[in-house]
Length: 294
Image (cartoon, rainbow, N blue to C red; front, side, top):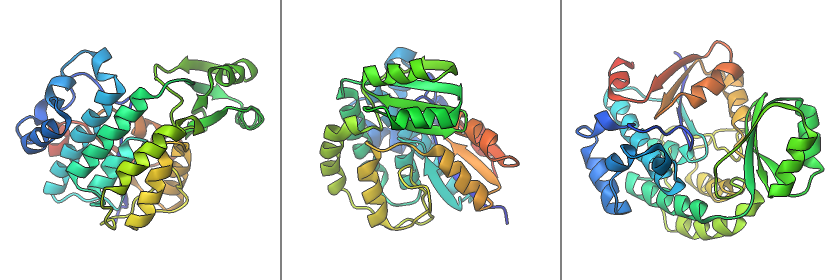
């Protein structure tokens, strides 16, 4: 039997028009989301790219669209053997695994997005093509910067103070260095204040044991079904790196043969393709692709 992982995208995978074909089949959740958020997911997904890219809108939109798509796959009898997500996408994975219900998950995503949007100070830059040992050594000896997204052997995002991020860019030769349009140094210790506030929101939400194992961004060494463990990991996520490269290593080591990216875009299947040779890759970002799946 083919072992299948469902992966859920994070911020950066959004696109104008996403979810447009889900207005009827996803009406219940879209109405529920509007009541929680005070604004329409469907309308925001049809707005400008600039508007949709605002953290406080991007995260709830991605969570809701991806959750609807996951529901549709399950309704067809398709089930994962493991779930995971990239940063924000981890919350959709928790919903998919039954750890949190949709409304509670969206309330968490709402609070998370507002706290991250309000963060100020610091910078993030994506680096592509570099000498990894040199990069890791330089980051380790530079105060105020970390590898925040370890996406693959040749693609990372560094996060920290403006000065420290720039010093890494000056010291390490890369094929491309792309400053990210974000308000703060996400997934770094500079998010400590926001993380403390978010922990209060997490404390109010019931975390059930998972129906299928979940692998966390914070500790991808093993998957877990423990709701208590997953809550502890969620508390740490905002200040910890996204270890996507290590998640890919876990998939390879545990002989997963198929990945289904559930949600907008193809970012995660693109990363997995480069990191896990031979993996069968499926993208489910719209109703047509749901109908073809299985």
